[in-house]
Length: 205
Image (cartoon, rainbow, N blue to C red):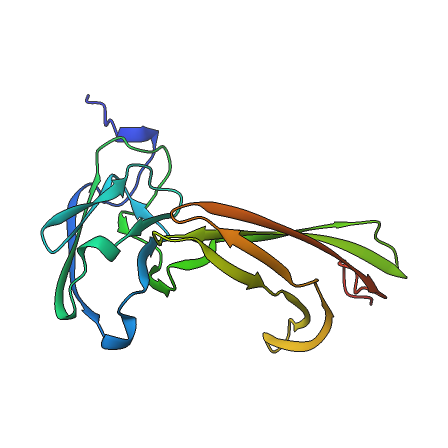
């Protein structure tokens, strides 16, 4: 008799090995001066990214997203060559993970001074059917060499979960003026009290 040994202790499709992805990127005239990032939601695994033959960076872990700054390596026009290498080695996971780029990839274009990635969060407190207080933190990132004075404006809207659209504005946080030093980050804090909040919970029968 013979024993069948399957890596990781369970059966799966053959997803191991090295994979390459290549794509041309275009930099339009209106994108000049912007910061341009590559956001990868999931790539399994050991992703390495090149742009125009330059090593941009990578991310070894395959189960979360990561961001890379393409700005220093981009050229005006439509002949920017992006290359991504992934390597899913044998016995890399107990469960079936898939392989390669298995989630969305985004090209994010922002002004050099911008709201940081996942840079906005809100904490609710003193919540009741009558009112709620919301504490806001916004992180502003600067990729410039000079100090920037900006105003941070945040509005609160109703979200229609059925249509997926933004509804009427119900509150606005106080406008905050902030000075961000070149190449630095600055957190902005504000609070607002809203009346008759729509509380989370199951839909009434």
